[in-house]
Length: 90
Image 1 (cartoon, helix red, strand yellow):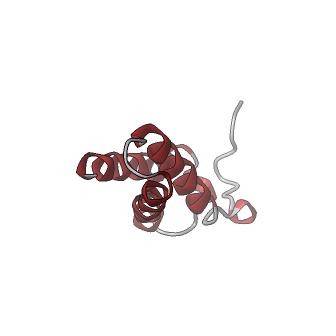
Image 2: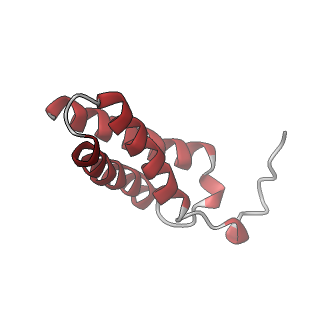
């Protein structure tokens, strides 16, 4: 379980940092809030997935942690508050 917790934490940090770095103009909240939301939601949802799947399913629980973390971080996104100073290019 310890290795899974480390994997959940890394995945949550990656989701939060990715959201801030790649789509920073969508998140008006402070950057730390977005990153910590990714971290905490990955730990929480990874723990719930571990309880649901049981031992011996580290890949499935990590995938659930990543998807759940991405869903929770996306709740912070505010496309209506997007900055017009930096237009996105394709």
